[in-house]
Image 1 (cartoon, rainbow, N blue to C red):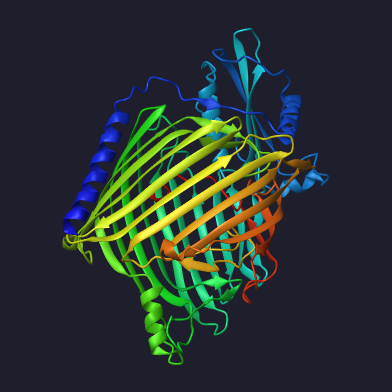
Image 2: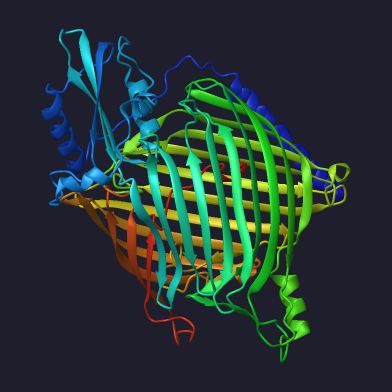
Length: 598
């Protein structure tokens, strides 16, 4: 086993490093590709409104012309098309023009370069304070001149942010965050937090600075306490703090970051808004609640050097320190044998980890701009081409770790445009090998296909398979509820492996004033299990409504109703109809390198 583990790690490293060398050797002289689509009716109305303010006609061929003027038109959350008195905007703080201009990669006097203008728009769309962002060329004062018109719409800065997950069993999660998201027009955010779950509520606060003193330097601090609703006693706490200089643009060469997170809280598995139970597979075994305590702490630091433009290669060096401890709660009313079985089967394995890491990430700066995929009626940016990564992290007892091992996290993804749709496939694998064996290993693959928009909408297809074939850390996956198996209770199925397949129709967006509406119909198949010989797929069908309030945020509010498809008798703990209310789409395209972390 020792030789097999070493061979597997060695082959993974060799293949990835050869691939990295090949990509790094490619010429970076070519400009990135920026495939752009049409504007929605809602965005076209915003362009007409902005043109009426500044005057001028659209320039159909701006490439290479000199930008003689950059004009920023800031739209308030409530405008003349909302049917609401615009006087209420007086209690809203609008982003300052220079705060918006600093995100632009072109300046007055530069030649119009479509790729740079498109990346400028992407930078602005990354700002959570903006919902609508459009950059268009206007005819200049001479044939070789052009004006850049930047149109932005602020979300309401002073409001209560809401995140809600409602199931047939009741409220599973309710988050209320009273916030001022644009202090002095600088995009600083101060907020309070209230999180309600069936057994607890949490109180917290956060302050976020995306740009410190106009520099590309971000700071964030967050802290929360958890209170048990039945006893009224303090049950735990969690929080984080970070400072970072990110890779802001495709030309940024250096980035760095420091951060820390902590959690001391009770973890519960909720199914249909109630605490799930675990029953050992033994005659006469008594069920125990799916509850355990988590105590975790992590610190990390990372320095990144980025190379290239169209083809990017980011090399990072860093270090991390982690502490994790998990355990069942003391409850003399529970059967000790069932509790021990629950500990073995479900509770994660805790340990200390300390060590450096080396990371390579290769990708392109090519993008597709499209509509009606993750949100409604607002421009979206999706990266195209290859995405490859390798992270190597030796963990050493000499530095305070529980054990010695070498871990690798490697993966590959590729995305191609399909008209104004796209397809993305990804595969990723984690292998952690001690001197004697492979202790943890998993592989996960996903394929997502979004068709071009046709007359009434588009189709979204996704299939995901994950196998955790070594599981020393005892990590579990859950399927069911508001995402990959609607029609069944939330987190209804549990296991170390899972398989899901989904197809969803998404309608085109319809503007009702400034509110954007859409509809979906879906068919979901999935299961979570331990070993593929235990695979038993479940099915569900349903439909839902999607709503975007651009005055508040870009994310969709979704309301889904799902019906399980069962042969024979329906399980007693599965309701005939399940419904879910939450923010963000249930299905999204694969996210390459999600495990690369900070």
